[in-house]
Image 1 (cartoon, rainbow, N blue to C red):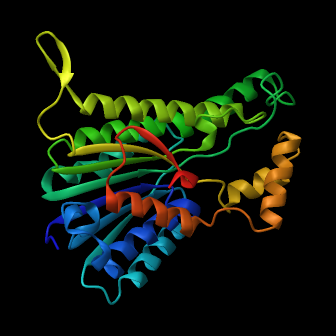
Image 2 (cartoon, rainbow, N blue to C red; image 1 turned 180 degrees about the horizontal axis):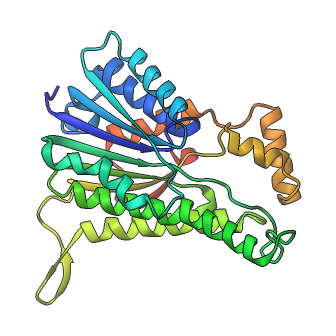
Length: 301
């Protein structure tokens, strides 16, 4: 295994899918190192020293995640260190400085591989397009729309763009956008959430295409440098058993059919466990065979 250092940045790491991914990566790095193939020896999962940067709004919950990562690696032969950053990604005014604080140290570290798990997001207001937030004044309603887009779209796109810029010198870079079936399939009464997921998917697909091409004097041609250096994946984790699906299962503003689906799936324990979807994502990273910029669903793997 490589002795090089790796970096993982995870947004929304305080609970749910974000926490599950952090723990799955810890398992793959510290516990299941024998399952990482020789072909993936340059990947984030083969790093002898892995540093995890965990981001979320709750400092105490982030620390819980960090402690759980440490417990997973207590007897491993790799070293995982963690840094927790309490921040509100919906606060656009402070976003540039917060992201800079996280990524600036990259310039002074000799990382062989870097991975971004762009996970943070929220449901936002639910309801039909013509009646979202109707019970509030137009000014308040518009503010809620803006806050949702700022959190689900603007901050996510900014984080990815700055990460891509900061890792331009790193030999092996992977960007994972936590997507959703909502990115490609319209769900009634979830328009703002669907629009945000669709925007994120397209942004990351464009990023993948830009990195697969180089511009010469006559236009755009395929790059012959190192197409495997930088890859992007839009990963839809399936309908998971999280606080978000609890909200959907109990919501009076959600489409009746969808509400019944989430409620029944929860009661019958048919929702995907965060640990299971995280394990599938780590498996995709281990094989590293996905097409850059593609959308892959939990149920496709």
